[in-house]
View 1 (tube, rainbow, N blue to C red):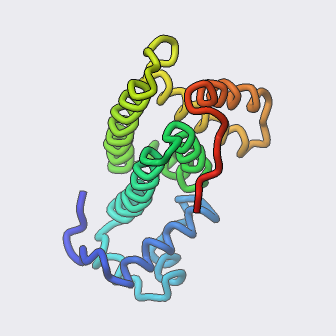
View 2 (tube, rainbow, N blue to C red):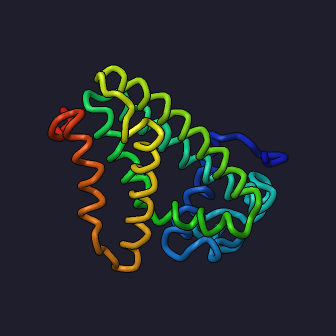
Amino acid sequence: MKPARGSDEDSPTRTALLDAAELIMREEGYAAVSTRRLAARAETNSALYHYYFGNMDNLFVELFRRGAERSYHRQLEALASPQPLWSLWEAIHDQSHTALTMEFVALANHRKAIRTEIADSSRRFRTLQLDAVTKILADYGKPAETYTPGALVLLMSSISRFLRMEEAFAVDTAHDEAIELIESFLRAVEGERRQPQP
């Protein structure tokens, strides 16, 4: 889904509108995003929202894509690090932490365009992660037994996401144990986590 007009991605006004939508979603949730609120927060004319995005679905899709692209590049960097599995775990854990992620999940229940975008993005991320983890484990000489590449990637993603959801409700029972399940495997494969060099 692409806006019909005004697709200049380098436009400061377009960026300001996306930034405004992101702030409103983080602070008050996706339902609070309106043309009037966007224009006020971005300090621009509400007609420009229509020029750049056409409708709210296009705005939400573009905002999701922007965040997904940033996360994708963070994961690429993580996978190129000296301890790629530790770095991938941290990148997934950080990504799951954002209130914005949770807002998009909620929004997907009501907007087909967002649901489709999240599904496409999730498949892209999963392909990247599976390909990389398969190669990493092979390079380490770790046979795919209990922790196959697919199981490891899915455990990292689902444990992290579920823990972040529970933390939002101040629930943390057995969280340390779930984290230890992943991190004990990472220590066995890559050793203790070393702090990345600046």
